Length: 386
Length: 246
Image 1: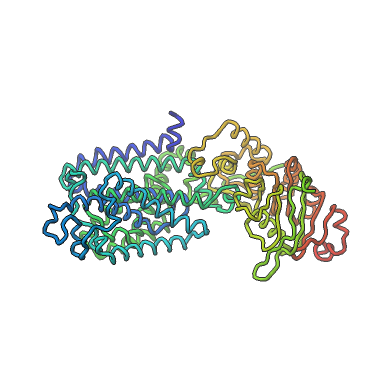
Image 2: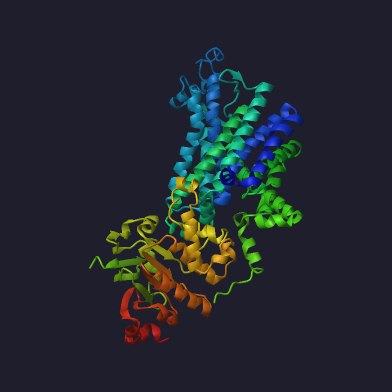
């Protein structure tokens, strides 16, 4: 038992997750009406992406500016299934070709494209939500990391992929629903997802999935693999010359981050009721990195909270002042990077350690940013060896 | 001959944009031998180590380690074959503790899955303790490695190699930037760890070389200028001219 607790990050990390669970699953549903709760559920889907970015970027040092791709792929896989279910021959009998999604009919398609066929099966869809983004991430990761492409170049390439995928989806309107995305989704296995009751259930399902992702994330960063991520971020060559295949490690963490993002995307489609290329593109992808940075890129729980808080702020602000949101977001990102590199989580732990000075010694050096080490080194007495 | 030699470098050459950093080099190291490589700046000393450990790919020639051709292996496979290499500037993981540094360098848990489900065995704990004693860092085991002094970082990196128990250990300027007592401690350390393995040391500090060296190889312009016992090499006129004289 003790070992199990330690494997998931120790008591304090588990308490943090328990607090999050209580807030999400008791406090929020008890105090907000379903319209707002459904919005909260939407914000939570971004928390999946942020948790993935903590592993990939915060720990592994691999900045991906294309997480929207995987969020979108997961979301589109789910949307394709729901759309097929909504496009029964009865529901679409006014179309030229009944039984295919409406946007295909508008684009003069007369039969379902081959890659849509498997999405009649729910089992396949659940598999595809994970497997399609994972395969795509593996492909990108393998091609990049085996060739030792990293840093800024990797960020730019992932950003470009996000833009390319957006253009592809918008351009292939008949196959993808184009700029409008896949809309008018109704039922999941015959169960109407638009009712208030369904929204409650989906919200809870999303919370549980997120909590599981938090646990998996904690398990990863507390394993030898997690320390290896830090080691690769700091001294990649030393890791390579200690007998590790660095590329494999990077591919794995990138795939993990993508799978998290994809699960978030699938829950987005379920709760919001549509999926469109807006959630894939450059802006959306960068927003996801901002969520993670604001929350704290070295804290799994912090990044999840960051995603929630920033998306909430975005909705509130863009309701009243739609023009200034991009400026606020940019300022937020610059501010966090310059003044709070560890984000909200860093602020909270610094503040916490001021209140409880004894806690400081427990914090692991891995969560400190590099310059803390050099700052405190002047206090440490250099040990002279005889 | 193959049996006595752990490392056989034959006709090795590498050129960077036409500049031949290593040129038709033949270099042999016996089992359990401590070899010091010296030479002026740009002689190709570090490049030689880069070639052996796979960081740089050879243009021509062969590097045979225990009759295995290293030029065909990737970096991590060369490590698995039993070659460990310390870099010139200390390369340690500053954000991890000394213990974590050593643990990450230990063999086992080198694939994605085995590192995810890696569990510390009592044997490994004892081994880390033993290495820490060897490299004078027992009291610093739970300290963040970033807080170590420069000399201690050098020792830690040597310890990170020792825990892999390599049959060939290559050290690039292990005493650079060290104080005199630290240098003496390092010489004692090297004399202890050269048991049961071959060690190649690149060094500039001639006093240190005398403390540890038996056989010395002098490199100059990518070629071997002289090779032999320290006394003989020191009196070689060509060596004095290109290197020792100034």
